[in-house]
Image (cartoon, rainbow, N blue to C red; front, side, top):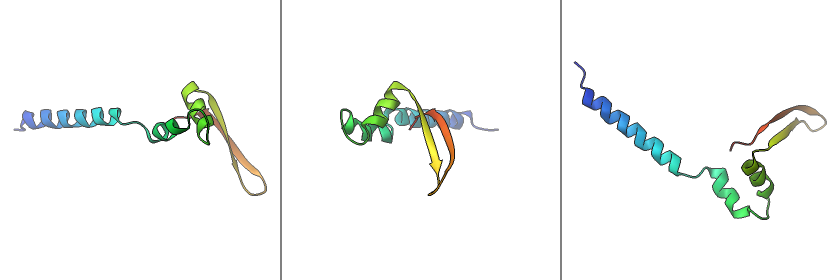
Length: 74
Protein backbone atom coordinates (compact mmCIF):
# COMPACT_ATOMS: atom_id res chain seq x y z
CA UNK A 1 0.00 0.00 0.00
CA UNK A 2 1.06 3.53 -0.70
CA UNK A 3 0.83 6.13 1.98
CA UNK A 4 -1.60 8.84 0.81
CA UNK A 5 -0.33 11.34 3.37
CA UNK A 6 3.03 11.57 1.59
CA UNK A 7 1.21 12.41 -1.65
CA UNK A 8 -0.64 15.20 0.11
CA UNK A 9 2.64 16.56 1.47
CA UNK A 10 4.28 16.58 -1.94
CA UNK A 11 1.27 18.39 -3.39
CA UNK A 12 1.40 21.04 -0.69
CA UNK A 13 5.17 21.42 -1.18
CA UNK A 14 4.75 22.01 -4.89
CA UNK A 15 1.93 24.49 -4.31
CA UNK A 16 4.06 26.53 -1.90
CA UNK A 17 6.90 26.58 -4.44
CA UNK A 18 4.59 27.90 -7.13
CA UNK A 19 3.25 30.53 -4.73
CA UNK A 20 6.81 31.66 -4.01
CA UNK A 21 7.61 31.83 -7.72
CA UNK A 22 4.52 33.97 -8.34
CA UNK A 23 5.63 36.46 -5.68
CA UNK A 24 9.04 37.01 -7.32
CA UNK A 25 9.28 39.71 -9.98
CA UNK A 26 10.56 38.59 -13.37
CA UNK A 27 14.15 39.67 -14.05
CA UNK A 28 13.23 41.98 -16.91
CA UNK A 29 10.52 43.74 -14.89
CA UNK A 30 12.84 44.41 -11.97
CA UNK A 31 15.62 45.69 -14.28
CA UNK A 32 13.28 47.85 -16.37
CA UNK A 33 11.73 49.42 -13.27
CA UNK A 34 14.88 51.52 -12.93
CA UNK A 35 14.45 52.94 -16.47
CA UNK A 36 10.71 53.68 -16.60
CA UNK A 37 11.04 57.27 -17.87
CA UNK A 38 14.42 57.22 -19.58
CA UNK A 39 17.35 54.97 -20.26
CA UNK A 40 18.22 52.06 -22.46
CA UNK A 41 15.40 49.76 -21.29
CA UNK A 42 12.60 52.34 -21.34
CA UNK A 43 11.53 51.44 -24.89
CA UNK A 44 11.46 47.70 -24.14
CA UNK A 45 9.63 48.35 -20.89
CA UNK A 46 6.92 50.41 -22.60
CA UNK A 47 6.49 47.75 -25.32
CA UNK A 48 6.19 45.07 -22.65
CA UNK A 49 3.66 47.00 -20.56
CA UNK A 50 1.51 48.03 -23.56
CA UNK A 51 1.72 44.47 -25.01
CA UNK A 52 2.75 45.63 -28.46
CA UNK A 53 4.23 43.40 -31.15
CA UNK A 54 7.97 43.44 -31.80
CA UNK A 55 9.78 42.61 -35.04
CA UNK A 56 13.24 41.07 -34.58
CA UNK A 57 15.62 40.87 -37.51
CA UNK A 58 18.19 38.07 -37.52
CA UNK A 59 21.19 39.11 -39.55
CA UNK A 60 24.65 38.20 -40.71
CA UNK A 61 27.37 40.76 -41.31
CA UNK A 62 26.34 41.33 -44.91
CA UNK A 63 22.67 40.24 -45.10
CA UNK A 64 19.43 39.66 -43.20
CA UNK A 65 18.75 35.98 -42.55
CA UNK A 66 15.16 36.29 -41.38
CA UNK A 67 12.63 38.05 -39.18
CA UNK A 68 10.46 37.14 -36.22
CA UNK A 69 7.32 38.95 -35.12
CA UNK A 70 5.72 38.49 -31.73
CA UNK A 71 5.07 39.81 -28.25
CA UNK A 72 7.75 40.56 -25.67
CA UNK A 73 7.24 38.17 -22.77
CA UNK A 74 10.47 38.34 -20.80
